[in-house]
Length: 167
View: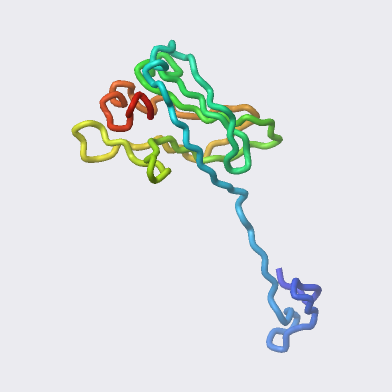
């Protein structure tokens, strides 16, 4: 898109080396509409939540991350019947939007002293179990996306991530 007309630098004189081309090239950039954010959710009193029925959730208070309002739905006995022995986690967009909000979602255990996600190592394993990590997801107004099988309750209860009835 070269022209001897107006350029970003204000020069409209042709270049002596390249007739018809401006003296100074123009520049621009294209940036993806991407923002990032992080939220630490702590479950306290785990033993009191694990008896909720399958499909019942506890919702976190709303928080702001990446310029949007979100909450997390915690299903201590799984969201769907197939996952009733698991903990399910869902990220919920808590606002009206005119176009989808694109997000990459990751759930994991936070290292308290470092405030970042750490891998979960199942008992007797030297390799970490994968954290839940999505591909790019489209969130619509008040929509939820998440992980049906974040972790099996029995594995959490045997892990070092559950301390003082919290994780």
